[in-house]
Length: 174
Length: 143
Image 1: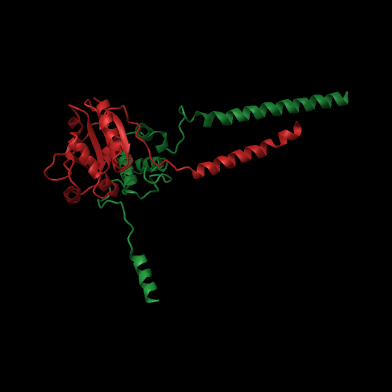
Image 2 (image 1 turned 90 degrees about the horizontal axis):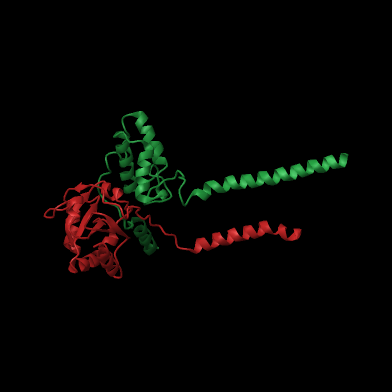
């Protein structure tokens, strides 16, 4: 009995070594999720990011659930999600954009090349609103209900399979 | 030989695809506050906040544009009279405990604080019993 208990430290060591080896092979989740889900949007009012489109403010999120898309012209995955935003727009979804650290000319150039799915784009030059809603990168997409409450967050570019998910979340936010 | 040199030159000149913006940094990203005491408060807080882009660095250490924007938030809020702990709380409300390097007692982190106390109590208990036993044995041997 006593001899058996001598093996306990080794067994513990083997357990932790095994755990470490297992965790090393697991993919690390690098995303920091927003803890603002279920909270109202903080008050904000951003200047227009491009000529010809209005800026964005909290007051624009009324009437029906809308998408808030955090993007930037310098962000490569934002190019990849452009067709999906276009598809959502065709389904009648209103998408309000917030351009992070962007110049008007660069943003306009991006919209000319990849299409404009937005009804409004606010210019967030110092990531102020991005930090206020708990977004940690570009692109990110939030579902905002008609009362201005954040209901869902999609981190990263919207893939084709994410389009029905976002439509369902918009439906749920009704 | 020439071909290798050419390849080497190309490799050196190749610019990695940078997902960086060309905007100037936020006013307080790289500028200290004029008031030394406030700057010291801001600097101490920035050392304990995680950069969300480069998650193993504090926002004081990181050159990511987003870390600069977070430093601007910290300094601007300190200047506006907010306390460092209120600013930490503001960020935790948005990003969870993960954004802070200062361990907080919460529903998920309490074992970190409870387990060491528990271990010390168990060890103290075992020691007391053993030492007590030995003293009894010694007393028994002498009698």
